[in-house]
Image (cartoon, rainbow, N blue to C red):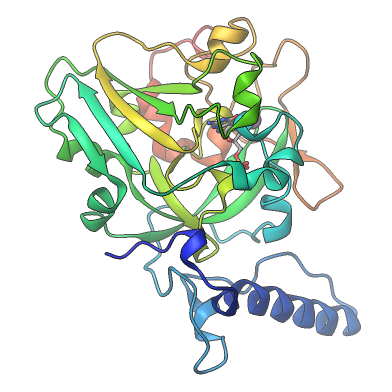
Length: 323
Ligand SMILES: Nc1nc2c(c(=O)[nH]1)N[C@H]1C(S)=C(S)[C@@H](COP(=O)(O)O)O[C@H]1N2
Ligand SMILES: [Mo]
């Protein structure tokens, strides 16, 4: 498969997103005129945005994908909000920094170093991984620990199926991920705001869950750099910090790996980080959340609303202890 990276896309080709947005604006205006309310993202379903583009126009990178498992039909968050309000400390620590510094991240070429308890370790090109994985539109919620949330149509594929290709052995109880370390270009990595590189981990059964996603795009397009290009995790039942961006290394491990936020503040951020309105962050309640683009807060759901799918992973565990 030929992967379209942002720098390969000519300006004349970047039409889909603007068509998508202007169409939404048009419909929003029409509905407002009719005296009704409207939510975001009523019009994006499994790639049909692209069917709406004018004939002959270049289509976005990822179109007409099947809808992935457990996708929500809630209103989508606005593309502009999702790409301008980010946590990505490699590109700066304020929410507006990652969009502004996005150019600091060089996403081509991109390789992923696979190591540890597996039979097929090695250096894999991103293209090679993508060649083997059927892409889907996976419309999942993302809930940040700072109590904002979003509904995003990710373009992604199964983390578990990808990991199986590397043939983890019976010692592989955990899997560890690492983000790019490139202080020459990623200027914030010259400051010790955290112990670079950013790192995350999962228990192997969590990683094998069908909701666990590797994403390469969103809204039918290649991932913008500020959202974790070219390859990131999406774990919709966990707080956002588990969804590590711009992954360059995967390691199968026997022991629970170190994880960035747990290393920084173990009292505040646990290894599991499952969305749980019943367990407060020491400095704030986790009971409510604000959807990007909305004013009123809404109640946060256990496991971010994915309890039916994932609760069994944690049966018998005290989730106030393993937070
Ligand atoms: N490498 C890396 N990954 C990261 C982060 C980061 O700072 N660096 N921030 C995390 C946090 S706290 C959140 S809430 C999500 C935000 O993803 P988004 O910007 O696409 O909404 O990315 C996560 N992944
Ligand atoms: Mo977060």
